[in-house]
Length: 177
Figure (tube, rainbow, N blue to C red):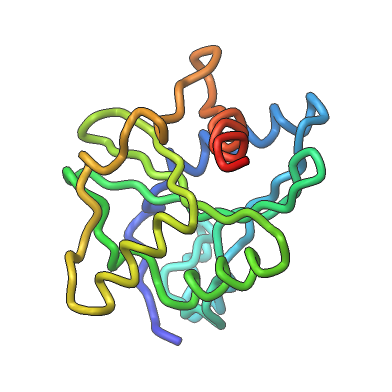
């Protein structure tokens, strides 16, 4: 596994909003979704602040979140971009493999995408993500343009506090029936 020097918590605002949302879901008895930590082996620590300044990833992570919502097993990754498209280089093969295996066991996989440029959140189901990812692997486009994220995938902000992704997921799953 590769070494890293900390560059701050990339995507931490998005993850914080998702964590708040997950806590609301838990308190309301709607879902139990947990953040999956990436295993890191510290090599250097700042003794004063007790923070890792150099370390390496012990193993590849799977996805950012996993859990259950009203009897449905879900897993997803959170991606944030300041560009006008979602770079597919930010989605790794082992993550795609995990989500595909998860779906084979009747789970539901997806990614949550935050476009900073447009201040909009989207839920991209695994099957749509896979089409773009497979095309990239076969020499196609290396990103998903913002224009491909239509209103049917947009997550509306609820109560000015959280990204109600389960509502959007429910709409998508109902549309598949």
